[in-house]
Length: 102
Image (cartoon, rainbow, N blue to C red; front, side):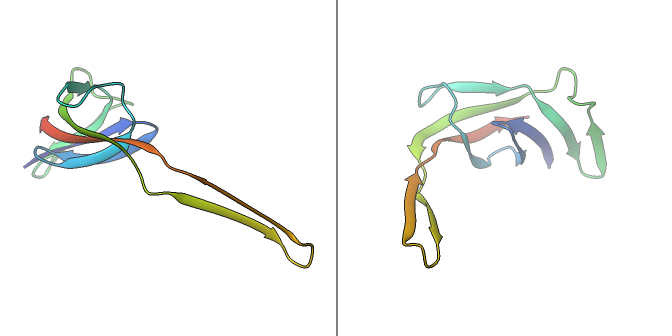
């Protein structure tokens, strides 16, 4: 089974055909097809091809399944015995991709 290691949104993901992954928000509508060209490595079985830093001509094609927001993350800061506490939270914008081909 073929797989690839791609880079998007400052993170790296190991993907194979049929996988669903959540990545940082991409500028695409639901149902669109996106091409991810930053392929760091690809392999099938025992063979592995590593790029420097990317493999020339390699691409991963994915379909946008959903645009959504992640669960809320809360950052709570406090200093003991001072009466200081601060709560701040945020929700990341994510895109769910289904890998079509490598």
